[in-house]
Image 1: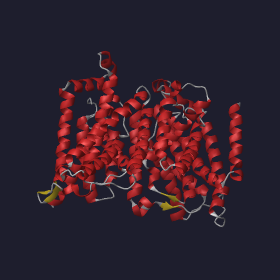
Image 2: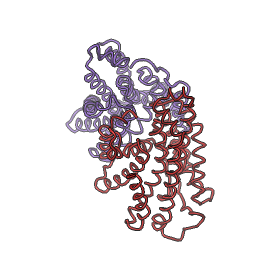
Image 3: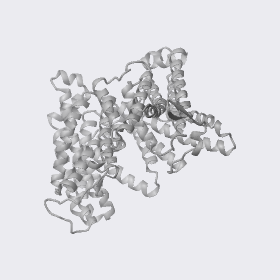
Image 4: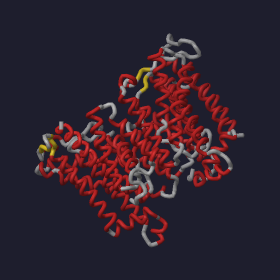
Length: 295
Length: 318
């Protein structure tokens, strides 16, 4: 019994760790730029594919399998640089427009990236074959958990702490929070908004692509994985509260674990339950659990 | 005056289309007309009320599945009954959903509609015994005006009687919507869109009017959904998926949400352009995404904006 519970909870927490990264990217962009980036799921998919290619190149070049996490994470972070291109090339034109247009522009990005991925990597699922269990498995209260899952959970926690440190303890973090609070005032105080926006969007993108890269050893990369994840990330930020980092953390845990529990108890419920919670939160408390907090 | 001439020409062209155009293109007109009905309704929310729904495919799903249920499970095969039941069901679902959604505007309205749409999508996907799961349900060929047309070949049926039936539905739907948006009710909606505070102080009940608009647009979407099923002979859950809702907003923007006929033009351009692009390269999303990005950035008034002289800046704040 405990074994089963631990299994369900641990797989939920692993999923939550990935979800948190994507949702955190969504939150930081929404907090500062007030753009709800529907394409965060596409960045996640992009990170996944680039991650597969990087790991393959690494093992083909004779790299030791137990080091595969390094090229994986590096590739996931590096491809976040597309954020600059997207921000400078597309988003900067619509900052002063109605949010409908901003939403639709990110929707356009989803369409383009989905096919760009198909064009580059083809339609067949891609996976990193047998690397998932290269670190072995451990027993936790009788349940068998892959060590890789624990590494990802730890990495995600570290990133959560890192973001917290970045936002509250550094000059850049103070600028981010000031901009999220009052853009005009921050600009009047001499903050170069173009650079802040470019940096923040790149940060958001890199969190998404890293999330995609880290999930790769556990599941195969598929071209639809992006649009499926965006609705889960959407649920996370609604439950947690738009723009709040703590909200992303708690929301990811709620969505990740609940989904895992629902799948094991009553599979029909799976996402149905999550959407019901999303609707309940939006109706009863539209700001979410942690809404109102800056960035 | 030129508007009327264009409209008369478009009407004549639509009537003559099956007689002169290749069957293939006539069949493409069927989804156009179904989407035309949907978008007429959607634009009551988007263009006239300023509310952008990212879950409107929910009501297309309701309408399409209502039709499938009637033909397959109940044994009623009259298209009139299918459309009627779809409209009634669409309204019944939209009443509670709309009551919750219209309390919010902007991004929260969009998110709530998206959540409801995905709730329905998951329901269609997971409750296999009721809905057929991811395979969906078959739609049997409906009777038109009480006549069983099962004897004629499928393409003749679709390109002939079914085509004109859809055209008639579209025309009736357009006339009704024209009356709605040019009535005092339509004026109230525009007032609410432009200045909700002032509308409220003038005695217009903002939430109630938004709710009316939501329910009416859902009825249109359901009617369009009922027309979408028969040409393919099948309905499946992707009809209610959120990207389908996104495509609806895309079509509306493509044509121009600032004008009455813009969404119809958008649906027409979307369907024929998609067909053309897919015949050249399999990657239509790449091209359509680029088109959408260009429209959003450079021509927010859509294709209609290219014909009229309104500056994009005027509509950019929707």
